[in-house]
Amino acid sequence: MSPWCNAATPMPSGSSGCSPAGNGAICRQAGRNEWQRQQPTQQSLSRPLCSASSRSPASSASSSSSSSPPTPSPLHSSRPSPPCPLYSPTTPSTTSKLLLAAAFLAYLTSPASAQLRIIAPQSLANDFSQTHGVVYGTTATFGTPFYGEHVLGNLLYGESKGKQHCTDEDYDIPADQAETGGEMVQHTVNIILVRRGECTFAQKVRVAAAKGAHAVVVVDKEKSDLTSEEIQKIVMASDGLGDDIRIPSILVSKDDGKKLIEAVQAGHVMAELAWDIPRGEVVIADFWMSSGSRESTEFLTRFKESAELLQYHLQFIPHYHLFSLPEGKDTTSLCLQKIDSCPECQVAHEEFCAPEPEQVGPITGADVVNEDLRQVCIWQTTSRKQQENGASYSQAFWDYVVKYGETCAGRSFGYDCSLKVMSGLGISVPEVEGCIKKNYRTILADHLVSVAWSAQALRLNGWRYSGPLDPETVLKALCSGYASPLRECIELLDGYTEVYYTPGITFSTVIVTIVIVGLTLVVAVDLYRRHVTRSVRKVLREEVMLEVQTQMADYIELEDNGGSSRKHGTLTF
Image (cartoon, rainbow, N blue to C red; front, side, top):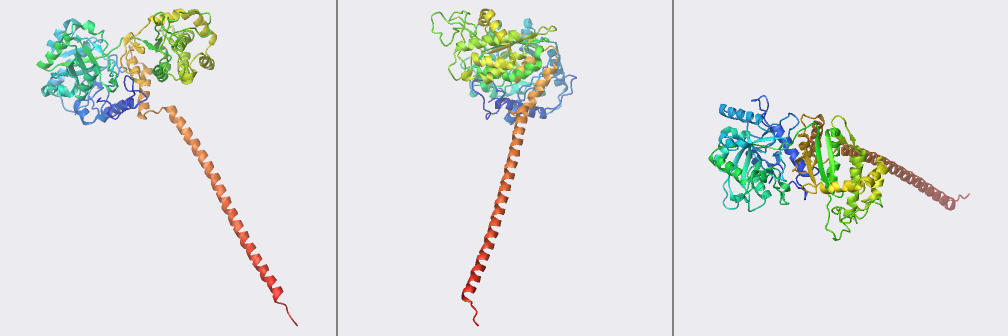
């Protein structure tokens, strides 16, 4: 079970992590709030050695519901601090203080692009002298890396009993490893080493997480011949069941991993994990997607607010997933046959194809290609470049993709609905169609060859993003790419915290709810007043009628008595 989301938290299927709209993100934020409330203050250094990102295994075991996810803090300094786990406040010894100070100085003076940096012992760092004490690897596509963070941790290793670290019973972390280093261990997180093989990466990481790991280093198979450079090209993919994993992991080569394991078995090893992206004044975000993908549309819809605030600080570049099919294949439903609004535009039937959309209705891949082409031309005809930094931004593009997703999903998907949306947003239809007519072949050919590692992928400043595709996590990764802290990033990240204090409810939703409740109360009061009025009138009417009937009854009785007197009481003389 993940240390940052309890077992009761439902996770969306098919996602790469906690959906922002799901309980997973709410769980992470709740854990973060609880962690920040309890976290002790460090005053031993002028700059904190670590930042709020994780917890100690003891705290995790005591309360899974208050466990915390990594909390990136790229905006408060050009080089973020490593995380502080929850621990019981103690008074560190002088030796521990000196060791921590030395580790901190090594952290400040070391390169920023590393993934695993050896802090201690120095003898192990010397084994990686050519890379300045750095061990390079590839990051898993599941779990949430500490984007922009430097995570100071203790390397731990338990020898496998034959199952290659695939089951909980297969290995144990020796007690002397956890205790080595004394109080210093309390100031760091647990980084568990495991061997590759026998089961999936996700299974190994899941087992390690249950043993208290805050991060995992997977060492390549003993029979593998892959070098460190070749390992970095490996895709450390999920098995499709890694949605519940919330800790980062990397894969390193056999030779590098052997040195780490031997060092851990010989004594205490401290290392630093880092996931940094190249930094600049403008962050370039390449996003590969499909106009027919519901997940892509949902991400763009939820990320729109961030894009609108960042504007020219963010160079967003949309890429659309296209492919070709072998000649002679049946391409009726997948490949472009004709281009909307351009009957004279000619394309080969197998040349430009797209997956059929995740919509209900007779929508084909050809319809998706047409819509992809329209969205590219909307971007090209409406984006404006800022002279200061050269970044381009298009408000019309963001308005269109969100409105189209809301209006044209399902059977409405296609050209007619697109025209209505463009007209409604004030986008020049002739300009867009002129762009299509003039540049359709160039645009489609460019997107056909501009492929990523997945049909839906994100790259930040040329760096491959491998976390979950939810706006909050993406924003944290994106904001860590700025050379200096950005006010807009601080505002947006603070806004996410406020949103998750009231899970799943936005400010606009609250206002609408208040208005609806107010109107309901007004209507209810009016109906009640009318009901009371009708009831009072009815009661009065009944009382009046009862009184009248009573009076009439008395009158009739008097008349009967009088008649009887006249008839039977005749006087005689």
